[in-house]
Amino acid sequence: MSEWNGVETALLTRLEKYRLRPRKSHAGAIRGERLSPKKGLSIEFADYRHYSPGDDLRHLDWNALARLDKAHIRTYRDEEELPVYLLVDTSASMGFGDPPKSHFARSLAACAGYVGLCGSDAIYPVALGSKLSEVRAIRGRSGYRRLQEWLRALPEGESRLSAGIQRFAQSGGRAGMALILSDGLDPQLPEALRSLGGRKHEVLFIQILSEVDMDPDLEGDLRLIDAEDEGTSVEITATSAVLQEYKKRLQAHCDELQAVCKRIGAWYLRVENRDSLEEVVVKRLRQSGALG
Image (cartoon, rainbow, N blue to C red; front, side, top):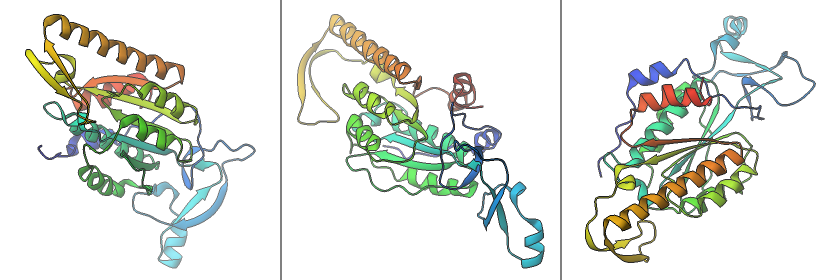
């Protein structure tokens, strides 16, 4: 499989003016640029902390810089960061398509992560693999390089999607925006989404399908092997009636995912691996209200 090439600098530059738009406030760990859900507080000075690359220079204390020759940032009591979780599907089915669905997922994660970093949000990248490892937050615009390196190093073919989401839902992280980037081809996914919705996360599910998923070019007697469970296989005769039934079931599955997202108050967006990245991020995500 070819290597993921990242996102063009021109698109990232265009994204700098946008921000992720949660429908409600979420408690962060440190100062950010969003109102805290805590009650009874006003916008007032709270404390100083050392400057980190990517911090908003509007909060830099220039007097302290001139006096101490050290950069300090003013923090405010009711401004906190937004936790943003980038949940990237690493299951084997994401390797299908030209370009692979996994590449489009990484590009979308890079774009969403960059928008969050520019907005002083805390980015938590999570590979939906067999084990949910500790994920350190990435902060500040300069942290994009670290996010990019993480995306390049993502494993493939090591997860069961629904199990990964269930583990994340049970991990006890602070509620925030949870962006799921996946083809959604797991029959247990609707139940996993319901579990995640009960954890107070605001979910944005971007389902990425390929031409192979939507219109498989199959003919004759075949033995199909489950890409995510090599021990499971089925023998079929690929007639036009069989392919029509497959398409019908795929559409029913996608409709169920969309209905579940609606019930838990999540955003749902279905895209194709050959779609324009800029079109999806700048236009369709803005139209959904998740970006503005």
